Length: 252
Image (cartoon, rainbow, N blue to C red; front, side, top):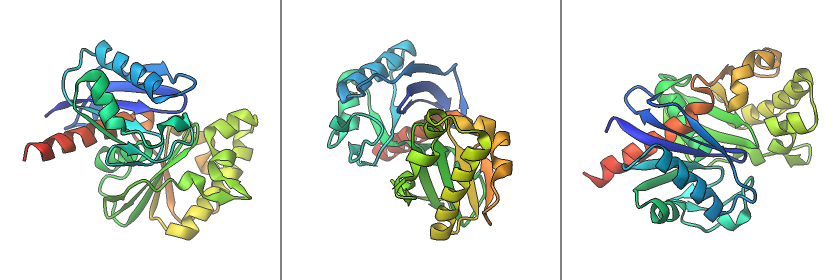
């Protein structure tokens, strides 16, 4: 299977594109629709189905979700409507589109893409990817193997979830300068390094395109810190890879 549709469901936007899973490149222009508010299962599935129709897609689809996902079922929903909790997202999507669906955590998808095609390619040991956006997503790898659903954005820093202080949304809401935000990110990453001692930390999400504004300001770390190579497309690519892997398993 060379081309698979990936859909990346986020707190602010839902992005989709077909992916060439052999190269990690998008094989058509990415489309994005604003995440509905409230972001209920029905509303989000309607947007996702609209994106499927826009691409005229008929094959397997991979979807990311901003929360813990186990066997397609949503267990947490910090940045979308809490009515998602307990929903079998894969079955819900399949019911709307009649297509085979694979659903996984959004940061796990982004991490898988970066490990396969991007900044983590060929890196052994412990690698931590963190996506800074509406919240902070995390993906942890040891010798290339994913430890799923880590949700390190909810580690407590100064009495609050880290993502309430150090996400890109927090930077925008508090009108923080890059220097001031970098101090918060630095403090958070130091917590993560104390817990995990990663060899490499990959910074993902849309803010990765502006890495030159804050990565040079990070001073408290032993780990190498680099921006994600696939930037904000990593979730789409990782979703497609997951759907391809699931399809291959079904046909064994």
